[in-house]
Length: 189
Image 1 (spheres, one colour):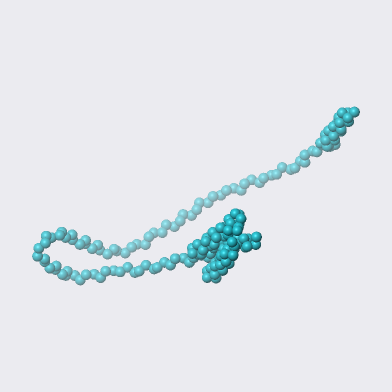
Image 2: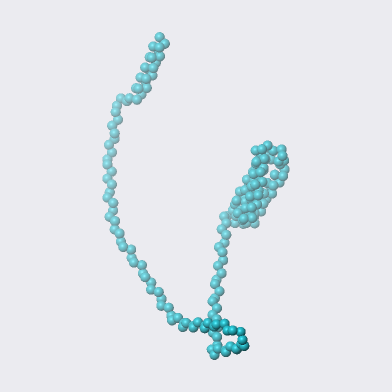
């Protein structure tokens, strides 16, 4: 009897599942009008105007070339002869005007680091708080994970100092704040 009941239950469940998949009416697809795509506009390509060719301005006459000084061969040592003075006076040497000095562009700074003295003081204050906090923590009594946090705080302090020397105040500020967070975490637990 229990087998018969089980079979009947299976038939009823299967019948319910199968009847859920069928519907009493079939849906017909909705017919939509076709879209009429307009033709592409005609392409008219105009030739680009020819650029004006500028003729270079004529250059004035060049000064006459000076003859190269004669090449003298060394003479054997002997009595010296005095050099004859040139009949023409020597032309004064032309001095080129000094080139204008080019100043390097100013260093770009973000608004947070525009006043370097104030920013550096703020970072140094944060570093001092972190260092004082580290001194108050007994390293020997810390469990290994907290020793790692202690070492990370020290590394962040050293990194912040190096960033200050390199004038990278944003990095220095970030490292100093992280070091201070590590120290607060060590002091709270």
